[in-house]
Length: 316
Image (cartoon, rainbow, N blue to C red; front, side):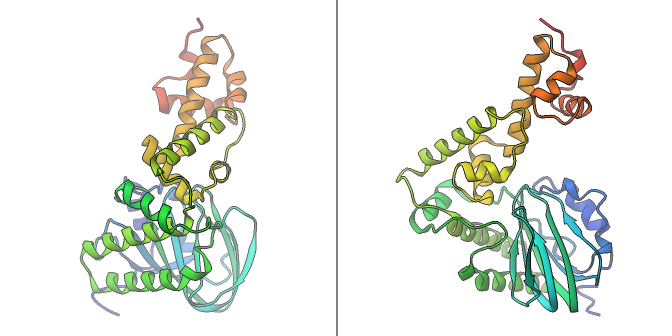
């Protein structure tokens, strides 16, 4: 065993650390028993201690059943590096089956759970990379690149046929750099490159004024939310409404508002709930009108947002 990069068989400590990293949207991993599904052999947060991105190498447990990776606003890419068999995966657009083939690239749909099952004739190995939503890039840089070089929107779970080899090479290089203990600068540069590359692949040609185009898209998404406060609203719906991929839409929206779409929608619902409570509606009536599954769901969200229970709001 390499003393500089020891084999790690338990993932619980990394899951705990993921939840404490404010740049990463990892709250959904709380309580998830990853050790049922994978054995981890490399983690960039343990050594060399990178925080610009998270890289992990896994060997997947045979016949582990269905694994559900929680929804996250972060970009989550993976590369299959070994194995054979069949992989069944749902990134929000329904189940699809692909051969387990070294070099195969995948990408989660931000804000949507990823479900997978597999049958292997040789153990599957993979590299996973998480990129936080706030990777620092000047807005003008991303928008200029997207406007000038952008291609068609990227289907969920597929980083475009002609970019897989490049992304795969980057992920392999990151794994090698992790094992070698490379400086944080290496990870930061790679994270920025991947963000720009994804923006290029997901961008669309359009107005010569990217800032104005961005404002229009954000306003349109917010209007869509306001019209559907009583309904479930998925990230994929919002992205489709403004003709962006979920990943690029998240970046555009957060850059414009300072919040993720989910957080923004919750605030809209709580504001509407407050108005309805002040008008004398009951908590259960307000929950139905504002898109909450139950009175308890509304009460918990209301308390987190305002510091008080909805029952404490006086009618006017």
